[in-house]
Image (cartoon, rainbow, N blue to C red; front, side, top):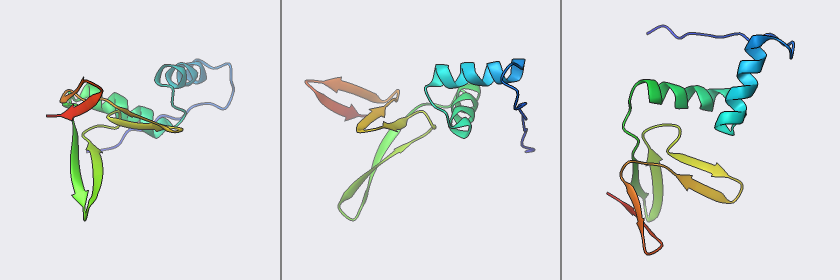
Length: 93
């Protein structure tokens, strides 16, 4: 599959730059690669799931898309169709 590339002008007044600023504001993320991965996952209708594995005795979280697991400062945000919270406990189905 051939990868597509979009080149944005460095001028802040162009429609492309305005689009980029809107994307960054909407996604709350300045990393364009992360934004592209989120858009691609949505376009592919990828099931959004989180799963857990263990490396020795250390648990590791994995996500099926770029938007499943997000770390912002000291906050870990999880998003998945197979997650639910009951009595302040996160369950992964």
